[in-house]
Amino acid sequence: SDELTQPPSVSVSPGQTARITCSGDALPKKYAYWYQQKSGQAPVLVIYEDNKRPSGIPERFSGSSSGTMATLTISGAQVEDEADYYCYSTGSNGNHRVFGGGTKLTVL
Amino acid sequence: QVHLVESGGGVVQPGGSLRLSCAASGFTFNNHGMHWVRQAPGKGLEWVAIISYDGSNKNYADSVKGRFTISRDNSNNTLFLQMTGLSAEDTAVYYCSTEVVVIDATPLDYWGQGNLVTVSS
Image (cartoon, rainbow over all chains, first blue to last red; front, side, top):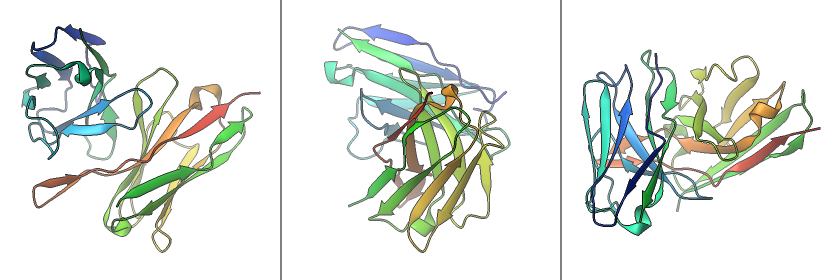
């Protein structure tokens, strides 16, 4: 299956570490990407190729991947990090793309 | 400055057709694969279709295969999505976006602002 499974919601207090997981059978062979989407806005890439951070993305955002699970970690989450987060990857045949169902991060 | 501007959305009756356009500027359009991604109201992102940089390869999500057609006009830097047999389940904001490519350790990933398609009688 090419599905990517995420928890619907994660909640942390400001300054705590938030971890959002993404599981998928193709992840051992395909890169994971992570997008942040705030209400009414287009998604923004925060992690690419499992663990790389684009310039302009705060250092508190990091990514990792092991086996069938990728993880987005926000170390010292801030209120402004409240958003929906989506993992994204390539299907096992390399032709399709797939998004996870999304995780709503609450920081309060 | 990179711009992706979608147009062509609106209200259409069930069973109807619509063609979305995405005008690109500020980057070398014909170097990039392009996607359509949609988001139903209050729901998550759903990948719809991809087209290669030269238009020779296309792939679709199962939910739209046989009904939607992705195409591009590299001479006019424009991406299209022809949608037919529309149903209420196709109601969504449709985004065009570039395939993520990494050049000199910099990921290039551009998105439009989105265009709402509403299927309703």
